[in-house]
Length: 140
Image 1 (cartoon, one colour):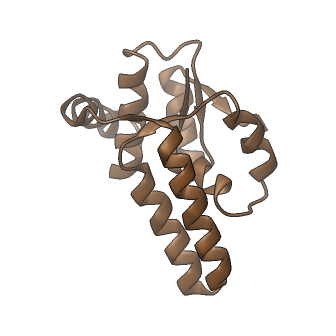
Image 2: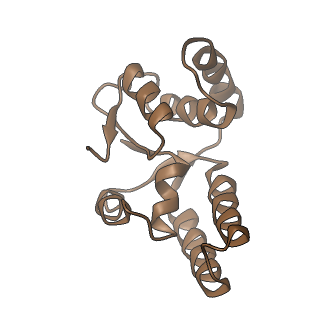
């Protein structure tokens, strides 16, 4: 199983330095947290407000997000994810959204992360995922 954090999924909607690498990884399928679409939409809108995306690029990014979200598998088990996130914030320096992402990944693999991938562009979250036992992608 290959779990995707929203930080990596953004690169499938907006051109970033790691877009080519994550596109190759996406061919194997995407599993993500049910709130990832909101996180990605927020990143797109923030970039638009900051002027790094034109209105046309914003529209293309939102369309790409819609296509991705229609095809990915979502982990929506709020209680189970929250339970894991509560443990994760106690042992890793994670923000709430990141703890929920990692909690969703643990739910997706039934708390057996060894042998499973975690696709992430956030260093702090990636380090926590690796400490939990996931293989971090894309590899440096």
